[in-house]
Image (tube, rainbow, N blue to C red; front, side):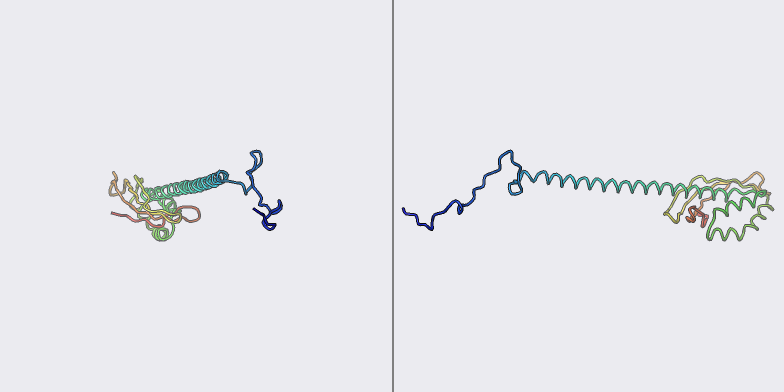
Length: 195
């Protein structure tokens, strides 16, 4: 069989034969196989897991902080409510003005306005009747609260002595107080007697 000159190839025209790299030679991008992609997938997966964990920790931290803030706020609301309601039912004719001033110092809004308008006549009634009333808040619970306002229900008892009942008469009240957060303190904005 005869070979024509146009069918002959020289070393320059021959296709290059590729051989796999020797074991001691580093892999090149052209020579990477499926095994070389595993570390990349592993690192991607590990990065995603770490991102999820960091995000979960941040969310949990914020929730814990919010819970602490709400607990502190609620404690302040209940403390103010107990103080003011106990003061409302603990009035003495010989210290009426001081008792009323303490209540007014923790009042705001409509409650403060109403209280200020009747304080003088109320002090006279206490003096004329020789009123001695001592009371306490037996239980109080927050109905609703946020950083600006709160509503509290309370069970209050008192022993009221006066010129008509020198031995005293026990009284039981259920009160609803609304508080406002003003100038970094909780003040009572309204008090209602509820049945």
